[in-house]
Image (cartoon, rainbow, N blue to C red; front, top):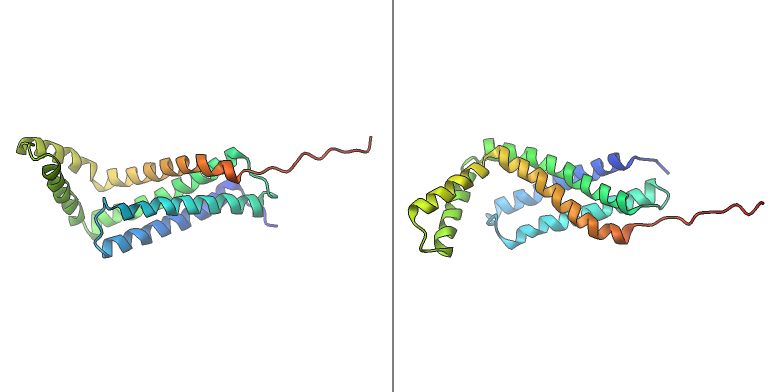
Length: 177
């Protein structure tokens, strides 16, 4: 059985998760799915499944069937961190070079939703809100938010599934006394 550190195992699955999230994002982009569509919650399912796979594989193949709650939590969180870094790089390149106009479409949708949700908003209130939104949708900020968001949600999901994945071998006592 090949011994692999928890961090290296999480890195492997984090890279795979990041690639899966990028593919999912590209599919949503090609299909022109609204960024605020409920179907985008599937990215959380990807984080959940890959975190479970990473923790289970490390437990079963590299740690003699043992996994503490903290190791499960750490594995899942690291998978999210590494996936977040990969997706952040992709997002930066995408929003900065591939389709910089996409941010403008986000702002247009946001403006329309503001008017739809609160028709009494004045144009100056909308402009002020859009100015704040524009600052938050710069490629750098969106990339940082991708890292933080993926790490945070992976941590939350890991808190739950680590309860069910943890396993420890019983302590063996030597009866040769």
